[in-house]
Amino acid sequence: MSTETIGVIGAGLMGHGIAYLLAAAGHTVRIYDPSAEWRNTLPERLESARALLGGDPALLGRISAHDQMPPAMTGTTFVFEAAPEKLPLKQQLFAELESLTAPETILASNSSAIPSTRIGEKLKHRGRVVGTHFWNPPHLVPLVEVTQNEFTSDATVQKTIALLRDAGRKPVHVRKDIPGFVGNRLQHALKREAIALVAAGVCDADTIDEVVKSGFGARMAVLGPMEQTDLVGVDLTLDIQNTVMADLDRSTEPTQLIKDKVAQGKLGMRTGEGFRKWTPESANAVRERLRQFLAEQAKAKK
Image 1 (spheres, rainbow, N blue to C red):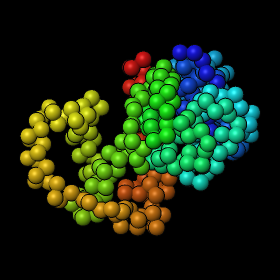
Image 2 (tube, rainbow, N blue to C red):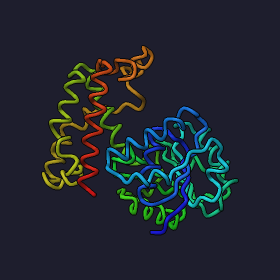
Image 3 (cartoon, rainbow, N blue to C red):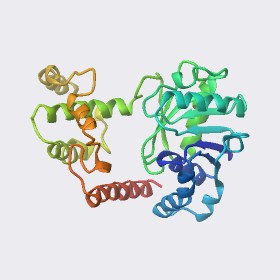
C-alpha cells in the first residue's frame, strides 16, 4: 500500500498508540493536541511503545506533534479522531476538519460508543465519515471496528479497512452504526450481569473476576462465543438458555450499585477503590501484567 499523510487528533492514551502503529506501517503522522502536557510527554510514551515492541527507532521520526490544527491536518488523506468521549466536542472537531481537508479525505472517529452518524451529522461531505473503534492500547490490541453509517460510502470503508490491515490490525466491518457497535455491546452486557450479581449478593467482585479469568475467559482468545456455541451444540445452548434467560439482568439503566460508587468517589484504581481496593503498587502490577501479555501476543503474531 502507498504511504499516506495521516492526521491524529489527540496525543493521549489512544492517540499516541494509533500514531505509533501507523508510523510503524510507514506512514507520515501528524498529531494535533492543544495540551502542552500531552505533547511534552508524547516522545517518552512513543519510545516506550517502540521499545516494548522492538520497532525501528527511525519510525518515530515520521511522527510530529502540533499545537494548532491547520498545520497538522492540511494535506492529510486520513484523519483519526481520538478526542474525549463528548459529542459536542467531536462535532466541533469534525466541522473544523471539513474546512481544513480535501473532500475526499477520510474522517474517522475512534469513539467507543457514539455513532459516527451523529458525529458527522453537520458536515456537507458525509460519505467520508466512518467509525474506527480501536481497543486500548491500540498498538497492542489488533481489533478495529470499522463502522459504516448510512451515509458512509463503500469506498471509504474499503480504503479504511485496507489501511488498517496493512498496518497489522484486524479490522472488522460493522454494517450498522449502533451505540457501542459490537465489542462494547458484548463487553457491557457481561458487565451488566457481573455488577448485578455483586449487587444481589450472589458473590463478590473477586469471585466474578476469578470465574471469568479461570473459566470461560481462558478460552475466549481462541474461541469466540459463536464458535463455542457450535462446538458444544446449538441444542445444548438452547437448553441452557431456557433455564437462565428469564433470570438474567434486564435493567435498562446502570445498576444503582455502580451509581453509588461513582457518587462516593470510588472510581477504581486511580482513587484506590472501585469494586475492589487498590494500592498504587497493586494497580501498577495489573497494568504491567496486561501490558506484557498484550506485547507478547503482538510479537507472536508478527
